[in-house]
Image 1 (cartoon, rainbow, N blue to C red):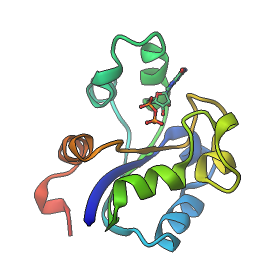
Image 2: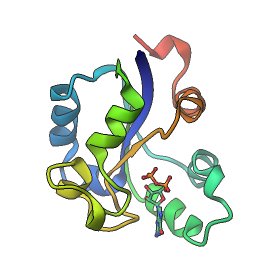
Image 3: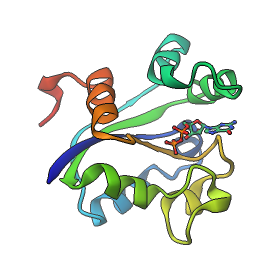
Image 4: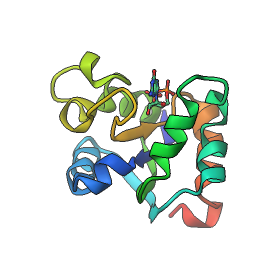
Length: 138
Ligand code: GDP
């Protein structure tokens, strides 16, 4: 099934110059980029994006991290996009991620883990709407 998902190259990876490598990995894996924007989240925008995590102990630190610098937000499309992107990203904690996945290559900690990908069709729909308007999706 052709699906859409939302991905973010997080501030750590943008600052360290990994944007091009990550985009190349996504394109090589067959993802079509429907929309792409570099932006910087405000505190309110980061809190809104990660609202499901607001009760977690790491929430303030996560919001601080996600607002520390520019990010690259993408709408991606391919067959089974949601699961495929999660597989390509690897485990949340890079210490547990398999060799060769994006987080194993570019993440430095469970928090500073270089890339976001929606975790379900419901989340993908909400996150795509949060970041892009229908008219942005080419
Ligand atoms: P993901 O779907 O793999 O991105 O993981 P989650 O949805 O569980 O968490 C969202 C983001 O919060 C992760 O990508 C990390 O940046 C951060 N995060 C998750 N777990 C932890 C944790 O235990 N400690 C800290 N500091 N950050 C975390």
